[in-house]
Amino acid sequence: MAEQTIPNSSVLAGWRRSSYSGPEGGSCVEVLDGYPAGVPVRDSKAPQGPALVFSAAGWAAFVVAVKTSGLRS
Image 1 (cartoon, rainbow, N blue to C red):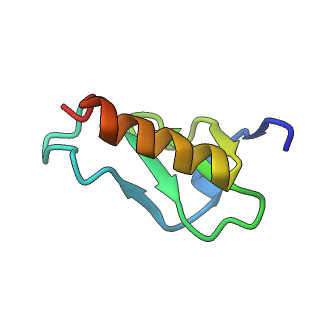
Image 2: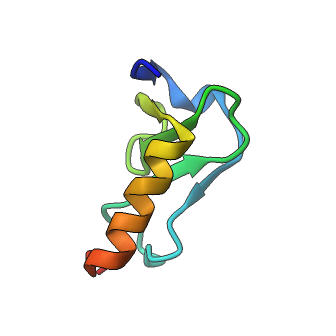
């Protein structure tokens, strides 16, 4: 799958923030489930900014790598 971007990610509804994000926000990402072309990921601090769309397999591999590496802090 070629890398895709969504120039203005605010046009899509249903974004969810990482469960590891604190209530004050900070540096975190949001993902959108159910997008047919892959998994869109955006910076939560810039909701009108772009989102990168990763393949489902690529996103799953990233999540596994983060969970097993201890980088969740």
